[in-house]
Length: 269
Ligand SMILES: C[S@@+](CC[C@H](N)C(=O)[O-])C[C@H]1O[C@@H](n2cnc3c(N)ncnc32)[C@H](O)[C@@H]1O
Image 1 (spheres, rainbow, N blue to C red):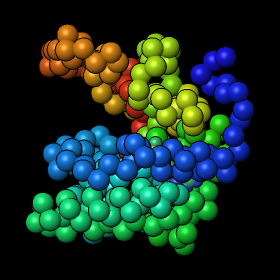
Image 2: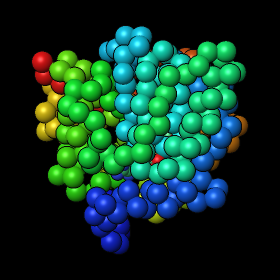
Image 3: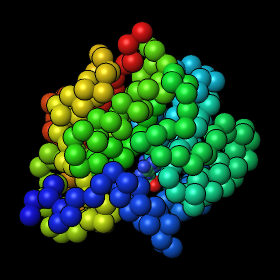
């Protein structure tokens, strides 16, 4: 069996059900209510947030569709966007509201973030409601291409003309991905219960185009860091840090060795 061939192919409805079970289990990472302020600050200056920040202005409405822990939503709110965070799981949304309030007090500046329960396949918003729509680790869980494109099209529907859709997925073509599976890297434990499609950067860009987006670009994030993802030994961390400092990260390397891929597309005017 390859990574892309789960024993039973879940329907789109099953994606939501499986995630909800996972997200609401007692030790789920999506229910941590102690997201550290430093993590939000570093996320707020990261490649997970910059494409959306660059395409929007302070106060613009931004949607994270399938927010999970909501770290990206919190970071976007920290960059003064008016964030709406949608998830299918009420438990993760309650948790996110607690993190928002606690972090707002910490930063002495309330974070504009509204958790909303909803299904990404039928987002509860009118066409063109947002300046940007994003998510990370969501779209790849629909195993059929048509279903993934339908999810992307639904994200594009709620973006205003001229706005952007920014999608992050794990790099299914990373040279070490099979090793991570084989050695049961904990970051992929969730993937065992919620199967995922192994995207490459070209395919991700094609899916955004198929969803009606234009001027699509695709890239990869943090290639050298992936050397120390698993096993997370200090010697590998030191190697990754050294490489980051000494060598450039050209685009071909980011796309091949980036842990996550990102594709950004524009809704035509
Ligand atoms: C991998 S997690 C996202 C991780 C997130 N980026 C973070 O930083 O924690 C995927 C999320 O998508 C949500 N989800 C799955 N299916 C959904 C659906 N049909 N509609 C809305 N959310 C959904 C799950 O509940 C889960 O919280």
